[in-house]
Image (cartoon, rainbow, N blue to C red; front, top):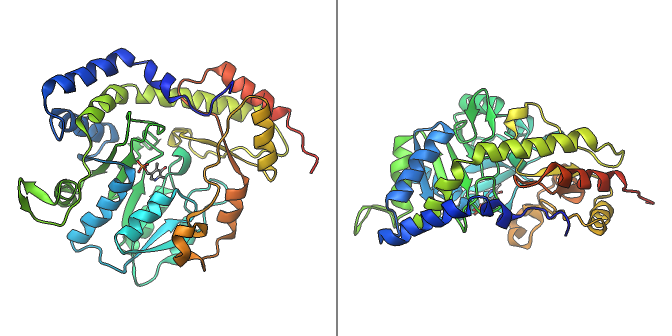
Length: 370
Ligand SMILES: *Cc1c(COP(=O)(O)O)cnc(C)c1O
């Protein structure tokens, strides 16, 4: 491929020396689980997000699941409670809910931003609703002011799935600082990616922090004393060391993503390709640049023949997956239509404007006989 969708090797090659030095530091330390690197990264990442606490965990799914589990241990959530969640999200958001024996109530997105629609959330609130999970889809913040108002009027938890939105900001507040607790993923392809799996929970809630600290480590705060039936989901020392190197460059990476997005938005002008809409520029961290087309499959094929790799996020919504036969009855026409029409163009911090221009030229030359 002339323009790959994302080049994780090139992203890390930029700091190869620093990453190798950080790995050597961990190797030489003799401490590989819950040591100084995780401690330091937790402080640095909490401070980056503008919150009091971060807890490093094994991955983004566990981060989401541990937030819900933590609230169960606090007695705020109980089995059978309903959690409102967008239908058009990565399956992890839904898995975290059902793992905890909570009930996912799927709602349609806003047709312009594809983010969770507060009007739909309001209509879905029932006497059993206890929480909303907002997903900052593709890196763009959900409408948190309106969701926060709903959450406060109905006494609901407001949880952020910020796995795609490291560094997205609104009114000087970053993703992670806009609800009661937030989950991040450091999967290598995310805006802040480790060199393997990783995740974090961030929150200002001390009680929740203590529960999650214990839950990620066999339910234990003091070795061999188990307060909860916890899990083993700890951020590795070596990944924490990698993430400390990369966190220092995150804002610069997001600026480059914004430049590429701006170029796409200025120069792609095609009647069959709908560009993403942005309300507040800095509220978008451009994890993905997602266009919409009624001729998506033909467009993807055309770009492929021009040497441009694209992906679909996501081809099948969770409620249409074999894993969720239980959600078969759910009818979400807009969500289903979006899954047929979305296409993610190449996007990443190592893309140059020449790469963007090749993508733009290829889009402009798209012709459809259908
Ligand atoms: C990537 C992602 C997750 C899961 O993160 P993992 O680290 O892969 O477990 C959860 N939610 C969303 C929206 C994601 O994009």
